[in-house]
Each structure stands twice: as C-alpha cells, then as structure tokens.
Length: 91
Ligand code: SF4
Ligand code: SF4
Image (tube, rainbow, N blue to C red; front, side, top):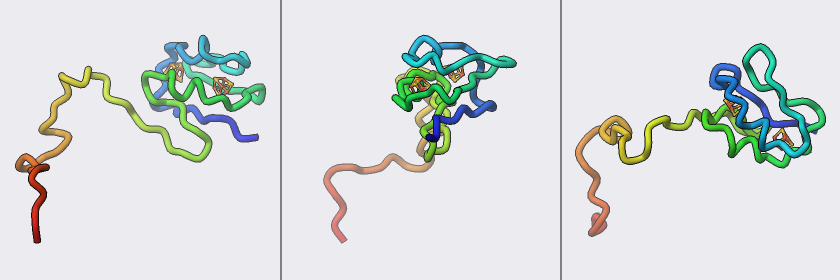
C-alpha cells in the first residue's frame, strides 16, 4: 500500500504531523518527517502539515502561503488589470 509522500524540500521538521497520526507512523529523522509502513492512509497528516509538505501518493506536494489571507500580495497572484466578474461579458 502506498503511503503519503513527504517532500524533504518543504518539510521543516516542525513535528505537527506526528501529533495527528493515529497509527504512530511518522517519525522525524535528520530533521525531516518520515512515514513508515504502519501508515493506514487516513490522510490526516496531509491536512495537518502547515508547509504542505505531505501529499497523497498520487498528488505532487503544494506549498501553502505562509502569510494570512488578508496580507497576501494580491497583485503577485494575478498580474494585469482587475478582472470584471459581473456583469458577464457577451461575445
Ligand atoms: S507537519 Fe509538515 S513540515 Fe512539520 S514535520 Fe510534518 S511534514 Fe514536516
Ligand atoms: S496518513 Fe494517517 S496514518 Fe498515515 S502517516 Fe498520515 S496521519 Fe499517519
């Protein structure tokens, strides 16, 4: 059985995933989380990781923004003129 994957580039060894694991399948080795074969693939750790370092076996890891939502630099997320969402454009 495939277990979730930890991206060593994103994991900072904070240990938050350990407390979420009901199977005691996660350990920190050399400052990075490691998931053992005891994993029951409940995926609790995927949602618990603040770095987005743990991904389901079939999905690539995604880095989550560190800033609170309201402090995110919006102009960097969507460059260009503001989008007109309403009324819808007619062609
Ligand atoms: S919660 Fe994420 S960043 Fe923290 S140790 Fe676990 S995998 Fe690494
Ligand atoms: S998927 Fe569930 S059982 Fe497996 S390592 Fe993550 S929290 Fe533990």
